[in-house]
Image (cartoon, rainbow, N blue to C red; front, side):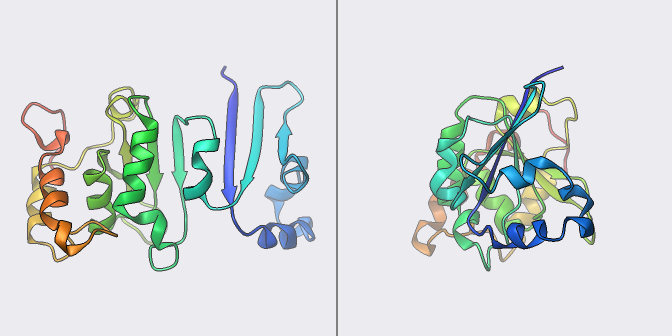
Length: 203
């Protein structure tokens, strides 16, 4: 019932180029769209115009502002050991500021305390996401309007999670400097979702 605009980011197109040489091995590549994404202007549009998929080549941290402000972000970079810059609290602050007061949900496979700490310190509302593969749960992060407008209402992390965080050795958000510990930890403790009266489940 609604038009769909999908924007992908990738800084290494070689795996896609290789896979497209063997489409009979990958059922999801037997379509014109992924082939057109390798040709300038890297855009595919459905025949009825209801769906548009574009590719921005380069690092997400450098180019995300070139895309329309999204309603959903599927955040799937390699782990912080490989893609360290995309998991830092400084990056999530930039992303959160860009989203402003618009409704948006960010979904990621990570459920680490350090990643959740970074998202909370950056101003996202953070919830436990559905399990996938070997992970019993993942993470969903929202702008406040994103969570309030969400039909799924995943349970927000509550006081029980905050108490576990207080005992954790991974309290400092990823990328934060030790000398800034008090500032970031204060921001996390004062997160709106932990305040009395905020609808949340205690996880």
